[in-house]
Image (tube, rainbow, N blue to C red; front, top):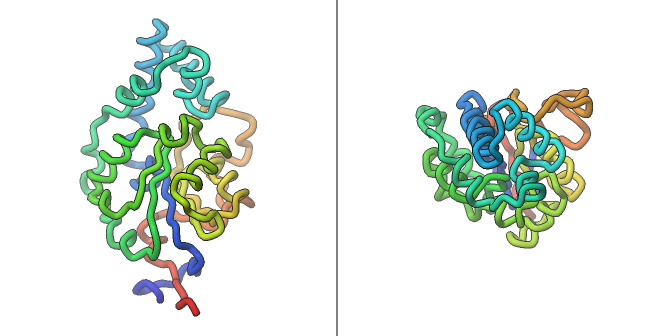
Amino acid sequence: MTLPGASGPDLSHIDSWVFDLDNTLYPSHCDLFAQIDVRMTDFVARTLSLPRAEAKALQKRYYAEHGTTLSGLMAVNRIHPSAFLDYVHDIDLSPLDGVPDLSAALSALPGKRYVFTNGSLRHAENITRKLKIDHLFDGMFDIAAANYLPKPRPEAFDRFFDVTGAAPNSSAMFEDLARNLVPAHARGMTTVLVRAGKDWGPPSEEKTAGEHPGHPPHVHHVADDLAHFLGSLTFKPVG
């Protein structure tokens, strides 16, 4: 089978479609993560009684050293994750109004569809409901389901496969952060980098190629527009 007008890669072997949430299922120009970023700084400043500039620096250091700000707060400051997640995801979703409909492209995919996010289940539900695609997913795997081990920790991916029963070699991972596709590729997933043009981490010499270098070795495909990419896929008949 091919989707109407399909001319893209053949992903006939895929039966599990795994999507990151922020800046992947909606375009990065919506800048929702800018709101989250501000609220993370506010939370750190308020909870640890720090001046805002120091809170911002600590937030980014935790991101660099622990994978997420939350992981750093949990490991170093013993912060309960629910307080952080509830606060930082209490954002205005009106920038999603007018985002192009993704439902037709998602519903045409054969197999199961999952959200795999470093955010909370509530955040994933709010975003997908606003986009009117919440009913199209077979599961939402959030940071709590991952035992608070964030992508790109390999254990987060192993936990995802254990919980969902998806097979890595027949799964495709869609992500806006190239580093999060490294463990996906290592486990045999087909990887798709959704170029967002934004990176919320601190400057680092380790990013000499940039967060979105185009086509690094661990990225099989690159998409500038998720709906267009999904609509271009080709599926050959099995058997």
